[in-house]
Length: 433
Image (cartoon, rainbow, N blue to C red; front, side, top):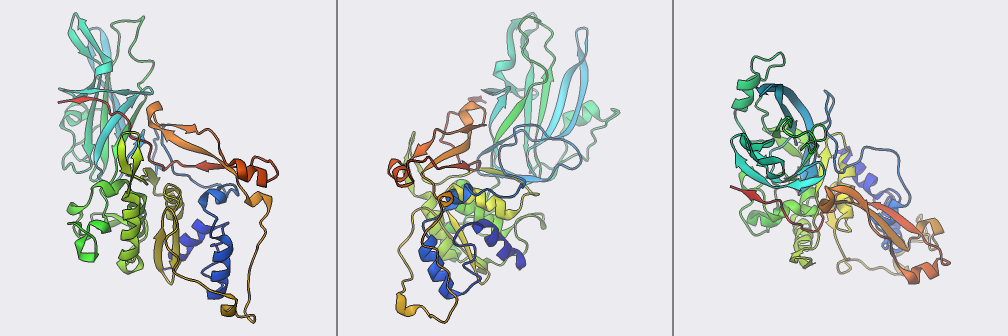
């Protein structure tokens, strides 16, 4: 499959591994010796052509050309507009209720984690319209406790249309019919009551701006499949067994992209009809367990490599994989149509050679002295900050003083996009049954 090679080439463009699998075994050994210290952060300073990027979709999208998408791991999205309308009268206010339906992905996922309104995480309480935002309740009015903002969530496994919307808008000029099921599509219904009760301190400044943190698509984890050398009940041919802590691990996410995502037998994203033979289970299980290994976190032990990402299907799989590899200092290699992955610190060497093993009659490539542009002695990263509404922040520079002296006392900083990096765990919005 030509796509296999193109993915590996795109991922390693600009590093010593870019031509490894083309020029033969001798050049492979020489280039590995010269370039093994380079990584994806070093490649980031070189830049690349303009392309569609992965990252937080903080603004609502709409229209007939919005690409399908899926969320892997824990991630935040504003979603895409599917339908909106108004209805009802409260007192003398016509069209008092504004209703909006947003798709949050195109594969069933793990459900809602938290909700953000106008940049602030809100707590939810069960209500007749679904879940009501406690921040948007006016207590003790002449009407009693008056709720103004509700959410109703569907995870993509629904089999019927929302009955309330069909009842409200079935006869509208823009009808909401009973065939609007959204098979496989997780979505949310937002209902907002116009706030006319108090003009000096309104609850809304325009339409509420909402974003949602979702648990991603349940993934197949080969390290939990005892039939291929793992330990557990996962089976690739039975998606009901999928899901678990591996959903947040970059190696598991990359594995599933390379196997491809389908819904009801229809391909959606990643490689198509990929054979499991191209992903040797011993290698991938070892990498997954390395991601899962515990490290000290702010709230105790946690997996050392975690990631989350929203992928539009218009994004090349190579670009999505590259974003995930950055979260675990990973490399993906393809040799003869077989993919292997390496994450974190290097493992024990599996190959050694000496001058006697090099054929002088064969073409050789070696670059012992790299240019200043190939050097870095510090990093500035951009990452999503959940404590600030999942807005993208820039980290303080991390510098290596010794390497700065080596580079003539110059600051050579790499600007790295870590949009798929899973943030530290943070307090969830409180949800009351």
